[in-house]
Image 1 (cartoon, rainbow, N blue to C red):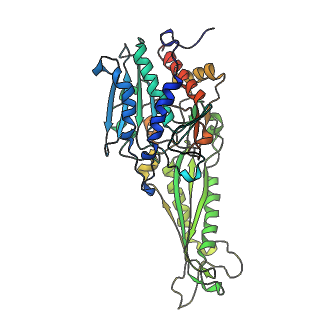
Image 2: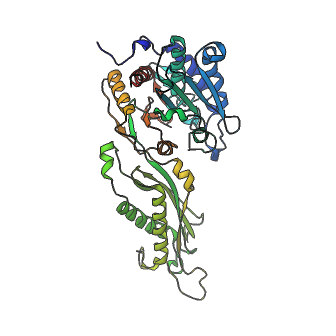
Image 3: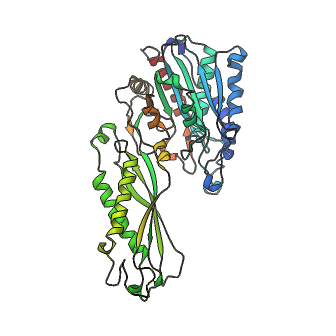
Length: 448
């Protein structure tokens, strides 16, 4: 039977016992690498690195091996880790395995059925925070480089991995943004960068941008028994939200390219939370804030969207007396010399500034890339079929890297059904298959 796997890499596989032993150590650190600054959780990814180095250090150039390992630190002793297995031909290009990150989203032990910060092996399932996103990938790729270092195949192309910090939430100034700005992976512009942080063992051809927003309506506090003397901010927020959503879908409808890429949904704008001034039930609330997000497919510019939505708000305020009301006593403009607030208003606040929004901009991968063909063919051989898809989830910096000249292709081998979820788990067999897929990608790319 013919195979895409190079004879140079034949018979290599992910050792179950070695992988589980490493993952025990990595998941054991996951409590220390939770990332949510609003909860006071700042990840200490430096705790992950010694476990990786204990496996790779014996194979570095300093110890007579082929691997070159660099720790790239830009903030608070939190190292990004770059691993290079050098090729024999400096002009042949590189295969990059990047994007797997060493921080995790928070986990609440009270809502899990098992300790989220201890690896639990239950048959083929590997439970623990980070098994799917993304410490499971970090461990698997580490052992891939160990296998390369032990085998020492004469590959034309270099193979480069980059494990990053501060991925959850799109943190800037610490991780991949700094690595790229410093030119530390410029060699990957000659080749394909596989961003390994999606799911379900299939190529991902596109992601969405993410914009978080807060629509605040300000009215006039008054007794609910005299509603004609007040401005109900809850009603005003609801009407404004209805208008903004309607106009958003008119101006940013489903794009013709979305079906070609396989996006399951078009761009969306929807509320997800609401808050109002605390008071008695017999009071009209003086302010109400509706918050939510926009998921924007990569065929629209997020900064244009922000500017357009801000214009919706300006026009609502200019014509607030024309907004639909709720019943005969509902109004957004008041008259009378004794009225302190005569006109309601709405405001739009964006959680992130323009630079941060650009960091999280969606990507449409190059469908004609030889690197995409490599991953499709490798996936089909190992998994039996390849079904590329696109999703309105978001990844940091991938669009900016593409704009800077990197061929970014996306994949991942955890499970989307357990991403960021209680009782997160990955499949051991999926990670073993991932090891084989990556070997085949390396093999195919080495022939170009």
